[in-house]
Image (cartoon, rainbow, N blue to C red; front, top):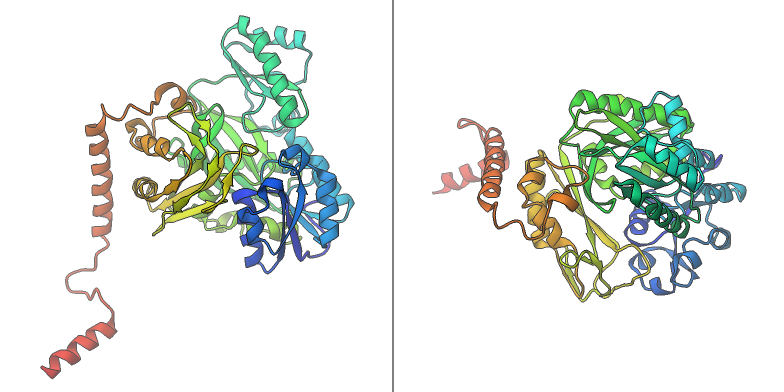
Length: 505
């Protein structure tokens, strides 16, 4: 069964590219595993290729001719002696036929079994599955209906609604429809995009919950029946259904709701005998009711924020589970500490409708310091092409409180320098200047409806006051930890040295 091979593997092929390929390579190195990269023509000198122990050419630049070629990837794995494959995220990560192909060739698939990917990867099937397990779902259609049937069903679902592809994710094949007269055009557009992105034009309808927050629960499961959740992530800062910033924990839900959502996420995973890492995504409405949105049967882009607040290395845990081991921690042993924020650094121009940018990185300076992590997939001299996702790095900051994490992220963004092409760093800086964002008063429509790149001039006094409060809070917290007047605040060795010097005078 995929996800639980009978023998330990020693060499892992990473069927991906960019920062996630580098991330997986590092995890393999720490576990003493050999690693193999694959690359297309334009990725010949890419960072993940240089980091890997071995690397093999996979095809031309278009993903369909390289990173999506299941047969070629399996052939490469057998050629180099790789006995495991990690799909990363995107590309083939949620394709059950890829997991099954690995299983058929006795190659360990570092992810869930094909049956679980099939059950939860098809959103219509997933809705039925979790509903049967008692998980609340958003009202909508349950079958891939014909166009005329979907048109009739739209009136019962009600407007506004979403047309959503049954396969894949990332906002592809998704359209918002506010009026009946716009439905037919949006339906055909969604079908075309879904067909191009996933090879499957099937769609379904879902009621649009306005003012909703997008909150997801990270789960881990092993082949021995153990399932745990690693807390929640707030993913409501989106543009065209593409996430831009995530944080953990969410500022919108309280402890009791978090526990209930975690329990429901675990129940959903158990319903399909899930193994390995996965994410249950929910919408939370204005009254704090939550509804199942979808399950991502893979590692998430935003997994670092969970790693920072739980101190669990999710990628290494994936590998351990795929080798047939039990989870390293029980639910009671998982501790949540502090707050983490992730900014996706994309090669795109936020001043020009987020137009993708291409070119060579002439120079860059990465932020460092306490609580700062950068998961990068490129370095100086690398070429950014139009063939793949524009994300070039993830900037993640941790703090003991959300206030400290925000202040640290502001500092890190100011330090981040990339020359040679435009990035969305200015967007993140403007976002962190938004009083509504700082106060946690945002939803999934915030960026597109209530945020502007030029709005910071009118609310600077309010922003300054908010950050002054955050700074004062941090100063008060740290002051309360200062050693008392009658206690030593330096080491005994320094005290001995001082007394010896004083005795010599």
